[in-house]
Length: 272
Image (cartoon, rainbow, N blue to C red; front, side, top):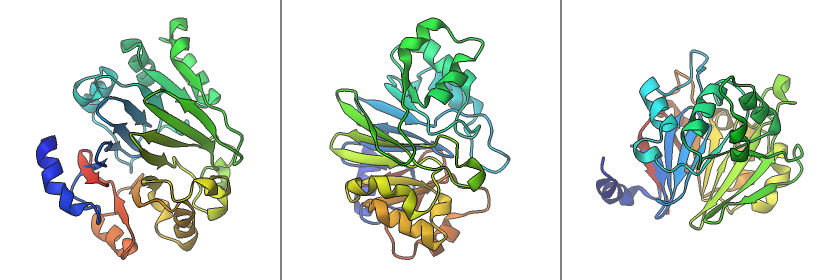
């Protein structure tokens, strides 16, 4: 659907966040769903991607086609002019070092922001060139204790380390990224553990989020619901959706809450 038609058709759905598309859009900021936890955030001038390139879907999560991956890597179409790529963590359904290295080699204007441990994996790629060091941004907050801020002029990010879900991954760095762009604040939770105490250090930001992007496991249990309440985002969208969870099933979980779900590359949502 062309952008003008998309805006016209979707304005009536702002309050309910209709499940008819893969872009979450405000009046000035578009959040486009890629696959799994991959999203693109843009205001028409600045472009930020989070967890966009990965190779392992573990046989159950959504992934990009080869053609879709190459469009990102080559900066084609709507991926032209990428400013920043952020990575939540190193798991293979969120991150792929060779693809990210290729993106950096293709576009010297792209900055890659991630934990130092993730950047070391990029440096280990056989095609990594020392000249790419200038494009790497190490983001290393203390676990569950504070926020690291980075200002890019037209937009800014705040990043915190919130514990990864599943006890065996508690020591893994999982970065939660807040993107402030065109007066909107969007938070991407990565694979954060769905317990309210995991977000105690973000309580000062509660109520400031226009949109929260949360793994689907936040939505089916009371602790997850309580964690969503801590953030108090105006709208919350589920992603990281395995096979077998349909829109219809999610609607049963949603009840009358301001929740939606990403399940298809190219669908969209609009928010004010």
